[in-house]
Image (tube, rainbow, N blue to C red; front, side):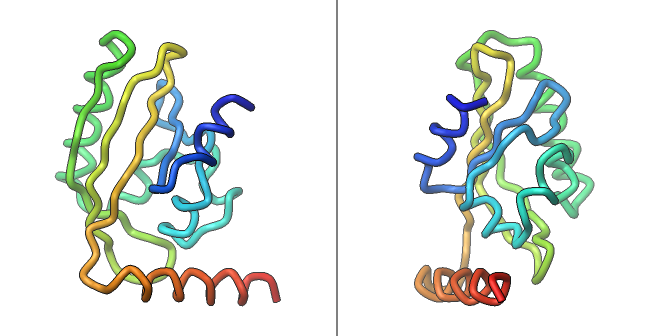
Length: 132
């Protein structure tokens, strides 16, 4: 997983690596900040655990299962809501791509109403409080 770790760390947007069953294998810090979780709360869990809407869960499931039968390089795009550990639902644009290993790389772009600087300050405050 060392190669994937390097790729995930290079991504600026929230990115997660899923196995063929939809379980989180690895993720980057941007995803942890978006979900307001710790690494151990995400790794080994299904990504669908953060989808609060059943219609979006079903849409992601169909897109994900469709990739399992396809060759590497195929992908999907979806707009969904994620439910972070703290706070309300966040609309996100997700892009998924199948890798040659069979894993699925999913990255997301939050669709936020608040200015980006406010989100950055909020994340910095959260990390500072966690460090205490």
